[in-house]
Length: 125
Figure 1 (tube, rainbow, N blue to C red):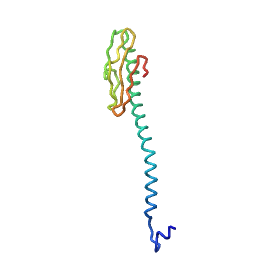
Figure 2 (figure 1 turned 120 degrees about the vertical axis):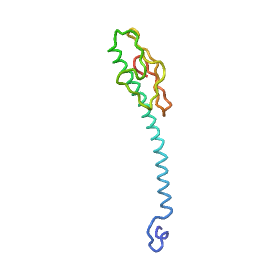
Figure 3 (figure 1 turned 135 degrees about the horizontal axis):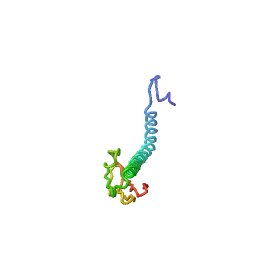
Figure 4 (figure 1 turned 45 degrees about the vertical axis):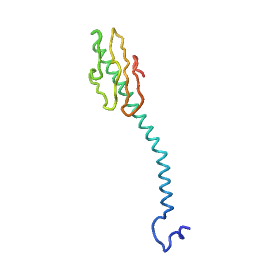
């Protein structure tokens, strides 16, 4: 059948063969692109969670060093050795240590994700 489509032994691909290859590539792209977008969103959410955990751990270490100093207010850049990721936004009231009790309602979110994580007093979301 292919020989009938290629008279005189001409080399190359027929239009049908090219259309089949393009259709296969289209099907693969339709499957791969949504999966890629889902993985990217998971990565962005993980970045926000990691930033929240790092902030909490850094603040806990800071408060442990400053014990006995009374109420200590901490802003997002106030904890030593804590730098915020440029793509993560922090909102809410910053962590304070009042008589040994740490309170917070900080929120962390990635700039390209719709999910917002609220950091609790025990360092969880």
